[in-house]
Length: 140
Image (cartoon, rainbow, N blue to C red; front, side):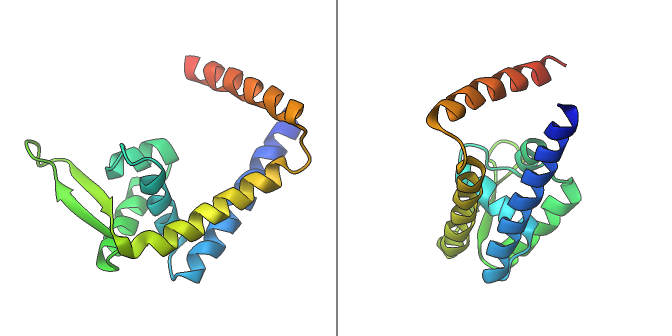
């Protein structure tokens, strides 16, 4: 079972990465730049680089480089938080809409691929199993 689980994780990670990379290439962005844009678009309440590093597990240096590049390209703006200059909030600009749309389509394609051979019952069971796995991992 462990081998199948690791195989599934590796295949899913590679497929997702390829889809996001392909979407990014269409608009001249790297995979990490797409990851940053999609994180901010899908998690508007978490608008700082540290949240991206923590939640997505991307190295701080990669996120920093991607954020700088996205700001230069006009896809992000940054605003220092009032009251605490150590924190900078990131906001998508309207220029980011096309990239976000392509990225979300890639994400939807990924989930369709993952679910295409699953029945509704399989999906319900899988959701319960995933919840249990997440709970176990959070206990550590």
